[in-house]
Image 1 (spheres, rainbow, N blue to C red):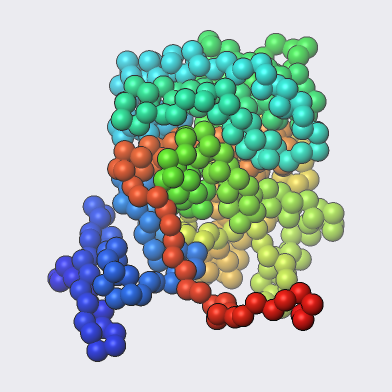
Image 2 (cartoon, rainbow, N blue to C red):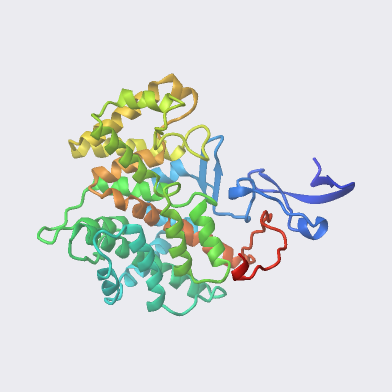
Amino acid sequence: MSDKAILEYGGKRYEFPVIKGTEDELAIDIKALRAETGMVTIDPGYKNTGSCESAVTFLDGEKGILRYRGYSIEELAEKADFLEVAYLLIFGELPNKAQLAKFHNDIKEESQVDEEMKKILDGFPKSAHPMGVLSSLTSALVAFNPTSVDVSSETAMYNSIVRILAKFPVLVAWTLRKKKGLPLDYGDDSLGYVENIHKMMFKRPNQDYKKDPIAIDALDKLLILHADHEQNCSTSTVRIVGSSHAGLFASLSAGISALWGPLHGGANQAVLEMLEAIEADGGDTKKYMAKAKDKDDPFRLMGFGHRVYKNFDPRAKIIKKAADDVLGNLGIQDPILDIAKGLEKEALEDPYFVDRKLYPNVDFYSGIIYRALGIPTEMFTVMFALGRLPGWIAQWREMRLRKEPIGRPRQVYIGENLRSFVPLEKR
């Protein structure tokens, strides 16, 4: 096979290298395209444009494959915990016992958030969307940690990574407790990383904290499944902001804002809003499945199918069991969750959805689990951000260590040609 791609235009012939990834993905290297031809490519949404070479995550949407650093998502979800996966994503290898213990201890040492951060939180009304609050608080961390990360120093890089992994769950918990009107809570160093997150979020001021193994296991799996997903909108945002040599916290804050959008991280919130609308209309799932199949009906079934996965979402298979465990063991009576189970059953059996591979995706099941755990709908995307944090960090670190150039897309101008200025009195 030729290792060159040929472009012919205007009677001229140009050659561009073809590069191959470790999973045999092929890409045409067009770095020299404009210099050699005077042309650029146009690719709205960058659907066919590789912005980087990355060793973090491999995704094959046609085959339903997701791997972190070469490990299948199925095996990681079954055998690893979230902190192990975070270490793997960021540093490239699974930690041994000593490395994991040090990582966790270092995180616990940095888990205090400056008390003045509470004043910033107090400035938000309870009606503020939690994603806006979280983005602002993350950005505000820069003020309390003003020194830029020395990316040439592994120690400085490690310390910065540990700091954000320690403080971000506190900000998430504070955002939830502000929403619920609960006093702000710090963690407990005797607990595991995810157990501590659960405690900070849900401990009542007048009650002792009780571990809920089923809830914690479901939360751990959800965080693992959301930890990275290749060059999606928020991850690309983190990388392009970081490419200007903006700091880690500022880059993460930008990623949170990108994730906020309903076409990205807001999808699981949209699922619950759809379920609530169905309940308000009487809860007839068959009616809404018929509407979803009617091309002339504007109704769209949220949480089914996936933009990238054309066969099935491998994460959905894993989290379906966790959803079944949570709903079965917690014994929750909730008409919204009953509607969700009804839609799931019909979609998995209806030939229309089966033939089109419109299976429930991870957003469908994660929304169900978060509701069952007592997390408000507006907090769903915040939980997504908590899970995605290690992936964002890993991608930012990789981009800086590879010394990637500042991101600067081109455009094709379609505006007015040169015009003469018309004085105000003559317009």
